[in-house]
Image 1: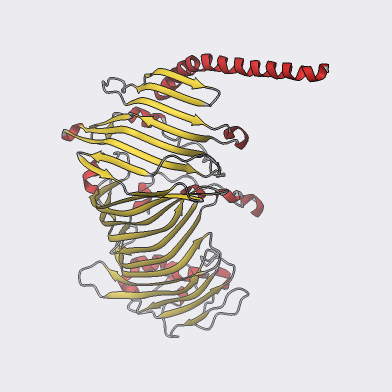
Image 2 (image 1 turned 45 degrees about the vertical axis):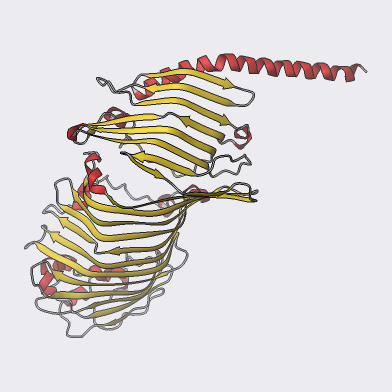
Length: 542
């Protein structure tokens, strides 16, 4: 009887303790959070941070923060950010899932003001410097993507302004309304009340996305559509940081995208991006104004892109009229190397194969990618080499590539064909050779044909004397032959070469055992056809 009577007493004590903890958290958390957030955020940002009020309800894990402001840069007068209200409804499932689970996140009256003070400089340069990655720091080891569940995201009455002081122009994005049902890679059975929608007004022009939702179906889903055409990127090129090694000269962007949300019963949430996007009339130069890259038209079909699941499935990618400028100065440095800064020293090779093997990645950290079809037409590559005497000026033109059903990681060889013409950059120069590749290729296996025809070594002699054996690197050096006869059979490789016996430059046929500089060709044209078969091996040679 006494034991039975003790249970109500214990229950009453436990309830009293719980109520006392709730009351303590309700009273103590708001002033403590306000004080610590203001001081720690101010120290982190190097700017003044103020918070008007904090309200915390421990029994429902709801937090409301009001009147947040981040001050201007030193010497400035315009505050960077103001936020009228932030509401966070955390779910208790965060405790046993060991990942943040947010049932609702609402931001009201967000206002952000940025300014460009001079070409290449902004009033947030101090923040960019604070959070810039340390170039000396070792890269972080790859790991699993962070797990989280964010439901019922709402952004109401937000405004963003950009004061371009050098040109005395102010761009304003206001009346921003964003509503997303969820952004999550973690299954959580929470009530979804937000319907997908994006609306805003850009410099006075209103935009409202179309959205469809079925929130009460067994497989709740919604779709958010975004489309625009002929967006001139050149108007925004001046806002790119001056520290970038490339300069956008022109480009026109088009997009027709759909963001689909699905919340199947008892399964992980799904966020899928699909549609198509295109970029045409692109021109990119280096910091000195020299052209680097351009194309007439790039069209990318997005079939099934799931960033939270690390999956990218592309449909057809079409590239037309691409032009790439490659140059090497007298010191042997490529122009593309200059874009990336000083190259890091190459580490010494490990003593054993086990030590040199790359670290194994977790299965969840690997991106899965697929491409239905790649179509490249009328591409050109201009090659200028100042390290040879005389300097070389060649081009690969009429480059045409077709590839289908490529996947990464590569499970099996995929078909690819390539054709191109080699020619001097001199006006009216005749073709100096034809290149063709046809077969199935992967990172470990190659099965196809490489064909060179009408190759005029004299037209490209300065470069060819330096690289005349490049094509033969598809075979390991120990498997090359020094005569015009058929290659001797080797395990894992099968070669069939048809080259006229009268072909000069015999040393080129023995490239693996003789220096390329022994090549002494004058006015010869070199037709060559090579069949390659390499199961389970890299086709890049030794």
